[in-house]
Image (cartoon, rainbow, N blue to C red; front, top):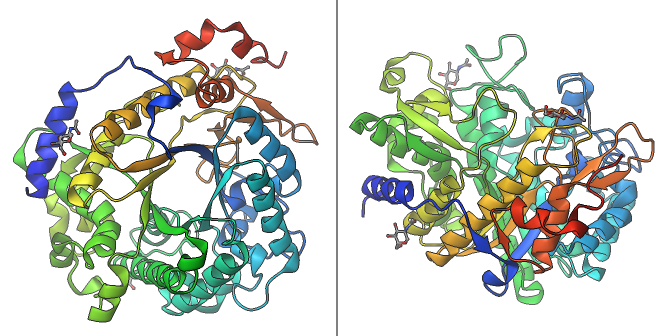
Length: 509
Ligand SMILES: *[C@@H]1O[C@H](CO)[C@@H](O)[C@H](O)[C@H]1NC(C)=O
Ligand SMILES: *[C@@H]1O[C@H](CO)[C@@H](O)[C@H](O)[C@H]1NC(C)=O
Ligand SMILES: *[C@@H]1O[C@H](CO)[C@@H](O)[C@H](O)[C@H]1NC(C)=O
């Protein structure tokens, strides 16, 4: 089946197949399916200038006041409070914790000597998780690229990164791989390079006009997003091959990559928008998954981008193809696609224009919260199943955004989790090879796009308290009930409200 006709069938069947009220429990999920929650190093650890850690590109950016005036200097201070946090995880019955390693904490100059204090911290965290029966899922690179390597050779735009990333990964596999079985190399590179090298509004802030006239001092939006992604794919493949060759036989682990999982819907029922939607999938998702699964970029991308798209040599293609054991999917909401073929005639091309689409958010601008629309995640899981041969998937991020304040009664988050976990169950029942679901985030962390203005956490962190005390929200209690298999839930909140014990600590005052 062609991708386009698959897409149309998929959209049609989803439109009629949405189930809004759902009864299910933990026991309905297959054996081995894992439920967790996540964070990332810069967003949760704090201790940014302690024990030998050096800055990442996010430290530099945030400390210059470019992240809503907020920084991750202290964040949730998990660096000092990891024992308490793991205890909270154990208390609610969390089965897995996804976190990332701060490269510049472990290897302060990006390459060379290991920082013993950094090594100790990750050993401590991993030991604490394992001793509480919580499975660690580790991401090697989650936005916080070492500033030292950025300064030295421009980070991901240089091919030198492949060697340094592989050496860093080698240290992590060697030191932690006896206890860590799930590795992701790079987190959502499709969003990272768009933000960092195309529009350039986030670190490393490389871009060229018409973007970033006031904030990009270097870069090339026509070429660098593709170059950076190419090096990310090569670095990923190099690290994954190293793992297979040197560690997998003994450690029995898996290496994947996290991708930002858009679900695209044509804005209108015209053929132009349908084709544009297909193009969006190829440019935003196929960009990563086609090389990993088929060994090359999508044909449409090659045609439109031409010589600005780096080419894989035969050897590289073989390295990249089949270099993932699983795909990590990050998904929050759905997006309309409108055809914008006119952009192909423009003189200055950039990544967005190359796709010749206009992406139109489905978010309600009057609401801070995200809509509960799990059919998009189901569609995406089905798309990956059909187009890419049903690889194992971990849903590594999915969660509800709310304003950060003292409301622990986060009913919209409970409804969102109920909707999406139910959607995953439907996808599983239709043959998806999804292996786990991780809600973002465990704590109210420093959010890369909102600073401390929004929250996604199961636990509220009181930033006015010098001790940064954590308080469980209703969603933590709901998730805990679900994880402990205690009650069959129907329509999210309703069943929970019938259970007085679940609500007894839902308010601070
Ligand atoms: C970007 O790179 C392309 C290809 O090398 C070149 O033609 C173009 O002039 C560059 N643009 C800028 C703004 O440097
Ligand atoms: C928290 O924020 C929500 C959404 O803006 C608002 O409705 C609610 O009143 C706020 N609660 C407190 C205690 O500030
Ligand atoms: C369920 O799977 C079948 C077979 O792969 C597919 O044809 C169908 O479109 C899927 N349904 C949904 C709702 O994804």
